[in-house]
Amino acid sequence: FFLQPTMVSPSKATSLATGTVGGGGTKVDAGAIAAPFRVEVREKVEALKAKGIDAPLLVGLLANTDPAARKYAEWTGKACRADGLRYELRTIDDPIDVESALMAANDDPAVHGIIVYYPIFGQVESFSGASQDDYLRDSVSVKCDVEGLCHTYRTNLYRNVRFLDYPTNTKKCVLPCTALSCVKILEQCPSCYDKSKPVGKHMEGQVVTVINRSEIVGRPLAAMLANDGADVYSIDINSIYLFRGGRLHKCEGETPESCVRKSSVVVTGVPTKSYRLPTDWIQPNTTVVNVASFKNVDEEVLLRIPGVTYVPMVGKVTVAMLERNLVRLYENFHHPDIRLKSIRNEEEAKGGKAKAVAGSWFGSALQVYTAVAVTALIGIALNNKRR
Image (cartoon, rainbow, N blue to C red; front, side, top):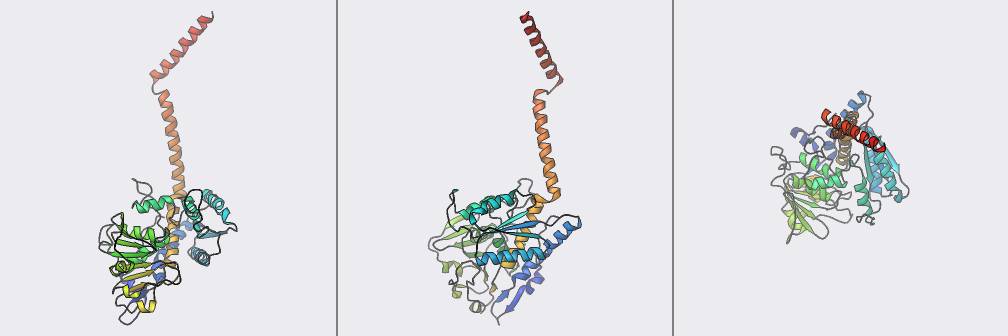
């Protein structure tokens, strides 16, 4: 049942393009990149069902009226059902009830994955000190977090820890869906990833600019690309940082324009309709990925630049990564074989502890004899004293 990496072959990469503007850029269909991942998920689900095992269950928690969140929930449900996965959307009328609904899903052994559709509280503070939405992200169980946004997965990502169970390394970490979708897209775009190099150096020599530093997209994406060897400029509304070699550096003297001009890859994720990335900053042969729900770039002008590769949307790949993460969680924690092994390990641990306790008192026949003899002597002495 365990997932193996799926790659689109180089020969197929050319079919990902949806059109080239005479001598200019190429527009990429993200759906073609998502397709092989979804095929892989369907095959795994069919293999489970052939053994009489139910498909993994994903539960969505929706407690807002945000159109983008509702649309994402619709896409998720439609894709899951199409690929044989089970999906249940739980709508919550009062946001204050989200935490209790989340805890109930965490504790339900029938639930294999959880996705919370944000924003719910926005930047409203919580008793934990962070925003209430951040608190909810950290409250999702590591066994059910399909978004890969809880504290454990985020911390491992920023430390470039790729497994949950070092040193056995059998449980790979889950990575944030949208950021992971960008990586999978870039792996299929020309000249971005070099898989002939060792792991951790596939983007060595590349300069990337990410215009967004949210905990959902921008920051994890910058860390992932830096973990793959790139120099990544992370641009937010009032600061620029450089991710390089596992370290974060504050940039002095850099501007958004200077960063974009030196970049071979530019990712835009500005969540406002009015923002437009100046296309005259984009150099020939640059790959541009739009992560925002709004178009952050003038597509027509951009595609006139020679050699540009443009990805206007990542949503279909994001949903495919969500499904892939659900399958990974299932194989890490919820598959019947894994659960049975976990139960046996717990029983063995309890048995070993009991033996250790027994051994500490009755480690040898001599110890038993001595204990009995001493007890008898004490009894005789007490009896004589009474007389």
